Amino acid sequence: MNPKMLKQIEQMQSNMMKAQEELGSETVEGSAGGGAVVVVMNGHQQVQSLTIDPEFVDPEDVETLQDAIVAALNDAQNKAQELMQTKMGSATGGLSGLGLPGL
Image 1: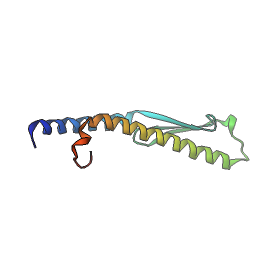
Image 2: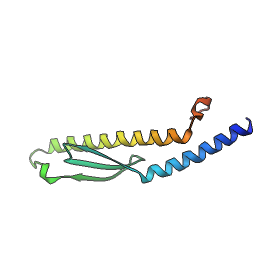
Image 3: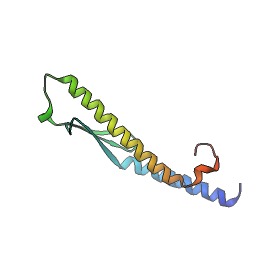
């Protein structure tokens, strides 16, 4: 492996580690039911908070609330995955075309 390629790989590793750290501090918000349920998740797809607006909750319709929670979680998870792909894609730069495993 030539020195230039080795330096590029080292830079990419450094960028990937930085991107991983940033993912832990960035958050996304998923919601459902017109904002009745809001989930905040970090870039590592860990739920940080769950908010349920009592104004929209019918105590006799728990099934709808459960569906809204699942939908909000899925919405937040999709956004966290998009954030991760963006961060990690920019961290690897153009090196993914080198045919190296894991890139």
